[in-house]
Image: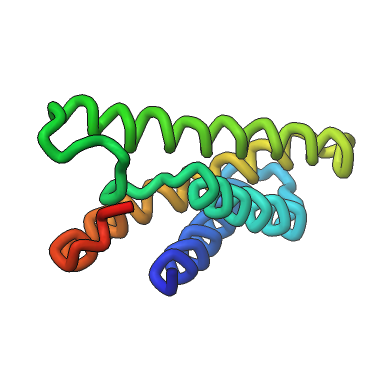
Length: 140
């Protein structure tokens, strides 16, 4: 869990940095506090929903002898898809209820920061924890 928190913090910082660069290059004003708040909501809800739906590339209920595509569908399409769509729906509802005046900023910040977290974690190998697989923690 410690690496998830670190990856979430780094992804949050990267997204706020990207928003700052966008504001500087485009000349558009960006409310960085609002971007930061919705980014925290997006990354946090994505992490929570991934945990809730059981997204972990190394844990599955499918037999080890099942074809590789079955493992792919179970891990990446079903579980990750549930977490992603639930996060998007939650962000849309929360943005409409709590920040309707800045709805687009809220939804874009929440969803793209969560995507940044996923992409960063994938890039640095956060989903390839070989030690957990080798130690037998991949069983439910």
